Image (cartoon, rainbow, N blue to C red; front, side, top):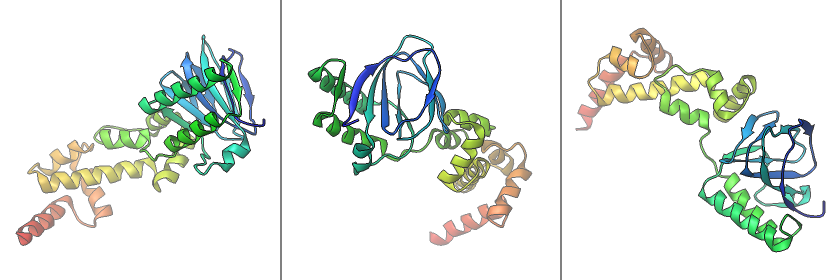
Length: 246
């Protein structure tokens, strides 16, 4: 490939597996596409996009009528970009991406209508797209823990949110946070319990249940492990600190 190739594509129902030397940005126009990589196993729908870096092995097929806007990006273009994206990306198509997709289509129509290569317009739009993909946002699994810490949360459920298999998810989560999913959940529960202890008059059993523990003893063990004192002692110390400040 001498430059970026952009075209509208339809995928067949027959499963295919391969890798290629170029990166690929896949923007849905209609229908779904099943994609499986080392990290992901997902059904790409009209609300999401997918980015494949060079040499990423992937399996794909479509079970129904579909059409996608696809940019094949040669390694030289990709690696020479100051905003290089090295990892697979599965992202929600927000208003910015909708606008960008429209501009890519307009650039495509200005060339041949279905397929075009190596224009400065596509390169400029690609640079713009890379700025979106490089933004750091909290992964869905972490957002879920932060919002649902009071419920029973399994690694399987969290892995499904990221579209990872469970084994890979646990490794990925540790690389992201430096903790296992369970350790991260305990950390969130501990911080929430601290807030309740200082800011409310709830008793220890009520606070334990509010942060996801059925028994007060579970919260006590958590505090002694990480704080070296009981929840009651933590409350007393913080209340004393508040009195001294005033």
